[in-house]
Picture (cartoon, one colour):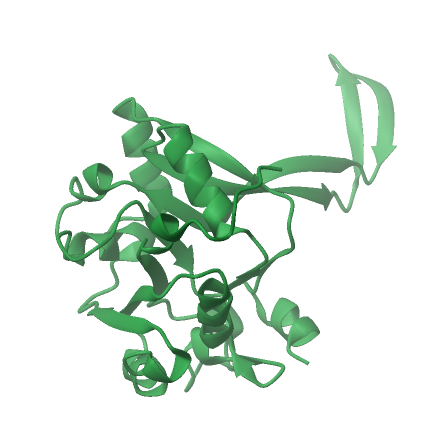
Length: 237
């Protein structure tokens, strides 16, 4: 694991962009009246915990994109003063997807490279290391990747032509998954069409076609994607 001094002040100016505009459909009925980022874990809204984690590593400048029940998020967090940070908002008039809302950034007021994260992720990543990794390797875009092991719930039949070679009971497979945390350069964000819906995977695919330097950053630290009700109820405390 790469290790850098926690006191490198120049690395702390980067803007943190939190995507908080989703409907949280998989969390219904919990998200019927409460946006997913405001659901509480051990008494604290998820998004507040995320902001505090960033703040503990020296980051103070946040932009949050909101849509579904966005006013509730804005009313709760305000300008960030009570959390000793600075928060600005991007209000999507329509759902712009995981990359589309970045097109509404004021590029002059944003400090790059920007760190982009979903607002339903709890992680213990050293974000200074991540940004240093991105800069040192001259990446245009860095994607955090987590190794996940999946168990197939069936016995897998291994064939040789049509002849059964063997059956493997509930095999395990390893997959590198997109952890929903990115570091992105200004040059890439300026290529987004304003107010056009764009999912992050499509944006990354477009940049790969344009031969941009897209790197992965392996996460070994704790990482929790609160993607569905079962995950949330397990950890909410």
